[in-house]
View 1 (cartoon, rainbow, N blue to C red):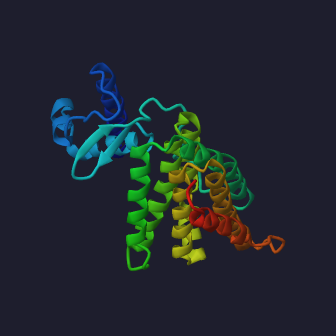
View 2: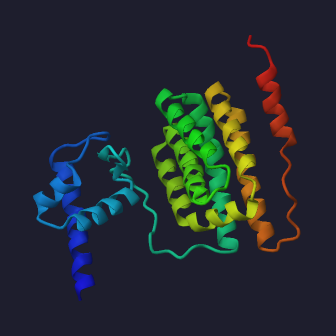
Length: 257
């Protein structure tokens, strides 16, 4: 019974925090009161506040910046939400999820290249710097690297400026987060993943919409190949990177007009 009461209190508090955001007209980027201030305002324990904030962060309503505070997120009024209760997909369902990502993320990478938003580009560079620090595979690095990798894909979608597709991609990444961690272990090629992400960012920074999309599509094809081979699908042929990588190298070496 105690657990049910605590859960009900957390549900109620989550709704009241959202009401606070709306009633005070808080906009994306605005800071919310501290955890302690919220606990005092609503007369609840701080662990209950933290649980409610985690829920709101999961739905994209807020962003928790460690050492800084809690801020209203750009996705506070998002339309598409991930299902937190769905079991991790397996087999063909996971392949279909990757197919869905492959349909959207190359397009979003192209949009990001067309926009070249300075703040979004800075976010992408920072995420790659974080990933680079965890390439060694030391204890604890895998979890941090996984988070940085997933955050990179979310950030590319955010950089596209397409709000609805960004939400869909975020939901798909949430749904098979566990499988992505397994893929990282199976791949055991952290540097290659990092290099592919760097190539995508370079194309976006250059404003090359076609190349950005091609590189993202090839990257996701690699992930799909790994998953399919892990399922024992012997008919899958591992993808080759030579053509896209060589194209990228040629673009880098060509003199500016």
